[in-house]
Image (cartoon, rainbow, N blue to C red):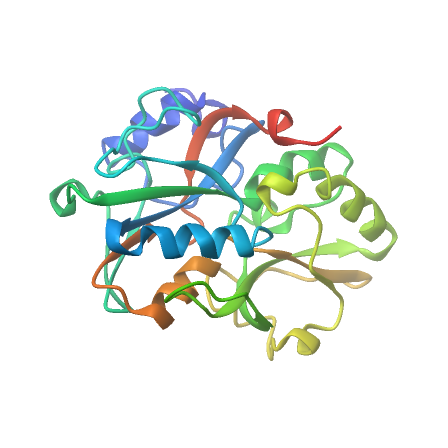
Length: 263
């Protein structure tokens, strides 16, 4: 069988759909955009749409499906959001109730699906200019942290920004900023560089989501807005039910990263 990191997006989604892959999607289908997932009952959809519009850095919208629709149109042809993500988090009244392989049995006719940009999408661009991506090197999930940076509230949704961290050699930090700033649709440039305490992170080795990674001598922690931010907002808002991707377990699209980049 072809190695999963060499498969096309469609081939990876097929593997995920059958339950054969349930791990992080970091480093897979390089060149293609990945997306965060939020599924909410219709009564909360407008508030969440407004929340995304007011907070485009952590919540960059790529596609919104009509109520009851679970087949994508823009990001991929006929992908199924109930089966094509390795692991889903199910929140009930703000609490994580389950992490499961598919959500077909939970589907409701009023569900509205939001797909948001993911920073995994710009990692290929970083590697092309020889900026290390440590969690891929170490076969881990990217470390993610809840910060003290407030998002702008909208309706019932409010809460802090979540960030992902990648250690970057000090001499390459400016290059990392330049490269990722082209990808505003997938979080764009960093929101913070250096001292994690300034954004409320007490211990880099204990992320709130994902895995700890090695930070080598001469490297600087660089923080990007993260699509797990909506999950923090869901925990604050406590809707009856919300379905998201499990952090690091993304929807892999058929859209090339370069299609989302500014020139």
